[in-house]
Image 1 (cartoon, helix red, strand yellow):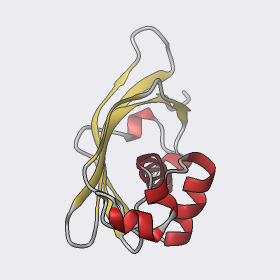
Image 2 (cartoon, one colour):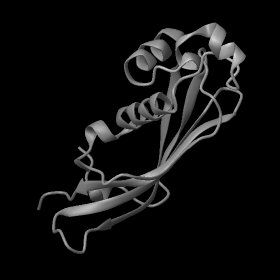
Image 3 (cartoon, one colour):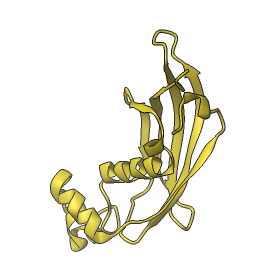
Length: 147
């Protein structure tokens, strides 16, 4: 189990690889973002996205899953008050293979809540050609190691 004391500025965790499938794009879109360019190949080809593209929210969910796989699922995470910034830099298309990094930009004990700390991070995914697809910065609350 990873606790606040295990995270430090500059620490980086590898994310992915994760292959994005057309079926996953359509399934997510049907439930959460039913716009034509997320549901239909022809509509997607005719759009600015240039092909069947994952919703930005789907891209964000994939990034979160990869962060959980890399370390958060084995940490004493307590949640978050939100993300500072999410950037959808390029369409995530069916067939893309995504990989990237989850980097700690700061970690400190809470001044007001004993036993809890704040972990700042930035994370990013790109495709195999190196095209940046998504970036996210934010914080997590993390339990300190028990005494």
